[in-house]
Length: 120
Image (cartoon, rainbow, N blue to C red):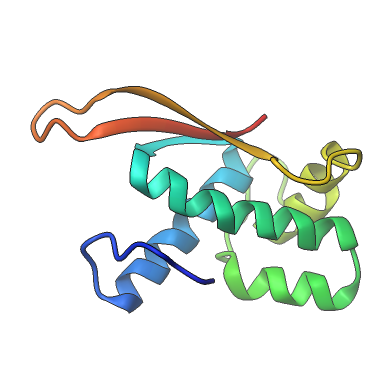
């Protein structure tokens, strides 16, 4: 997980935040966050999908290091299982560019630019 932006946080908080955001993108398909966070989590999610397309045990363990151990109550699958079983086959023909960042509006309160990052 190589970061370019510090996002105003210490390294442990930044890594945990980006792991949570990446897990949510995998579990829910899309999330709404600030533009800078979305741009940063995009590289992590693209890397995870590339690992999942490989599909071997080592790739599964590498993905499990990054993703949180969250279970989807509807299907009973963890984030890693969903990544390998549902998300990776969806992008079997693509070689890159699995996510898209769509800028939406500025947040009320601090006027931060918001975006939706999702699997498209």
